[in-house]
Length: 563
Image (cartoon, rainbow, N blue to C red):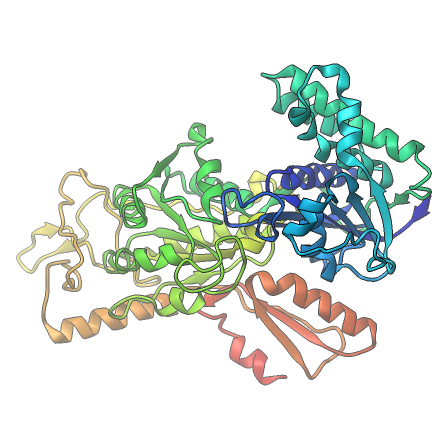
């Protein structure tokens, strides 16, 4: 047994081979073991690309360590390739000397021809720089399940569990959680559950008995990486969902999600639909415009309104976001960014929507922008976005992305008593006195500190007021085409956004550096890892990371002038 401080494993195969499930299970057991970890699922946009082709390759990369880590890593130490396509699609990322476990049953003439292999890479010497483990995964799995009465095709589906068992043996991962998970997942088909458990155990036993795996590895728990607390493994979309629920509970408001499914945001709709017991209502609309329209209507009715989408959906929602700016109602626009214009790269990550979030509306319609930096940080970012939306009566952009949404890391479960108080006061009566002494309700009479207008729930006696997208008269909310009033309203809405109180930017600069690396959003992990490497080489580098992109922290200019 060899002890190592960190390992990067990549599982790769057809999109139907269960690579995401295999990676998820290995990740869960690694989290329960106490390692720090970071993951990168990578799957094709097609629902099911042709089997055995390069476009159909799905992979899951996991980086785990006995110390604090920040990224899923660049180059895997171990590649598990379920077929020739998986090998060809990933071999360029694998460093010389790394271990490659290949399913030799798939390296026949036809699968190799599909991806352009004229000869077998297992035989032509092209992989001599790697430590190759030739394992007939399919044959061994079918043999292990011969007593279960399954067809060969049914038995073959369990080969990912055989591979998981083998890797679990190699890295001393716990097994009880996976066996329990399989029995729960396939509870309605107990024979399938037990077959998968048997394949998992067979993979473990194969590692234990074969001479091909002479070495196993130990990665100790990351005991010094975490403050004391209760931790769980969490993905960005799950953390964001929990953050939205927590925000609604802390605000004592119902949570309403109006959404249209879109990769990589759909998981939030799936998750929130499970939590009706927390006052959550989810509405899967017929399109993006209907989704945000319903969410804004819910905000008008006194709920915490949320809509989730990605870049193409933001474009469709832009007029209603402008309406939310005009109505001055709290609304969270959660944009899980993906790459490319139009429909672009549905399953691939890019920080592609910052300028659209800042400026992608007609007229002058400023919107605050908040961005989480890690999967677990999505929880806190959701709370912060809700704080701003509720306190200042404004729509708020929350810019996550596919890298954070699908990636996972350990998350310290917070104490509910430590969560911020987000409760708001609804308007209950008249707030303005006319010259003749009549008391009336003015929907655009503002809080002098926040410039927020009162939030009046429809149906409250005496609080009837005008609403709509045409420019408002300040105070009364009546329709106004007066140029001086329009100028005043434009400046007032901008002043409200500029006046939002956000924390000062914190700078990490232990050595008095001259150079500052500044980033935002999901670049936090790679930037921080790079800064750590430079400091280890005795290079003085400072680092700062922006969460608030509109408005900027008040001290940003002063910070930048120092470097």
